[in-house]
Image (cartoon, rainbow, N blue to C red; front, side, top):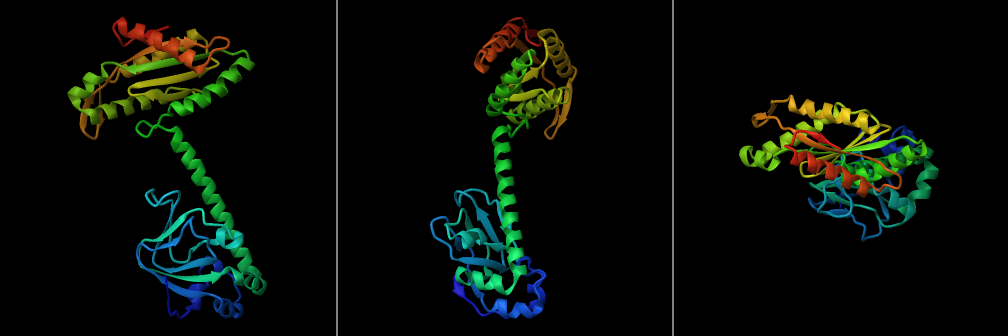
Length: 312
């Protein structure tokens, strides 16, 4: 980082979040506390390994924020007028992220020794800084939510994954047992999926799995939970549903896929697929593993009896 000459354009500065609604009479004296610096492309401005003493205001260029590692995808892109380093600037701890100049950039920086004087001169700056901190906390919370959701979602089909299945089973099995309500599971397997991939290609197989997930999802209740169990297998939890009702639902799902003789995909028109289904109902003291084992056994029978059918 190199110090630089800088001529303040008050009209532009007043539009920046940190200085919004600050009285013009205070602005010049406030800006005297800041120093201008230039960053080269690729230069690391903040790092979790180095304590930060400054608040940075981006004047020109672009900064990107990385969590955990510089090899990860950036989580935020900062544009002119944005601030960075405000959290570590205030609490005097190490930054929680990397901030990197992804092109030649210019910043204004304020040393933390000037913080008290700055806030005494302009309560509005303090209010703006608090607003920036609240925004950063909200962004962090949203990143946590997005990360948690991504960890539970199968990226191909958009269905939940096995991790989520474990979580939702604990919740639903406890609720159904407490309310003395039944809980059923359907385990579905796409018939002859290896042959489908061999004949039409793995990309076509991916589209077929998406068709299955979409078709099933559209026919389930909001309280039902569908997860991609692995490969071409899906598991559906049906809370508050008897085995007879679950059997009816399973047959309806099977018929809905059987009726799709072909479908349109980006690679062209593809043949539809059928599914075999195994059904199991929760028993007292059942674990997820024991419920799955019985559904899997019923699924095996459905395959033995010719596929495209439900057993259990």
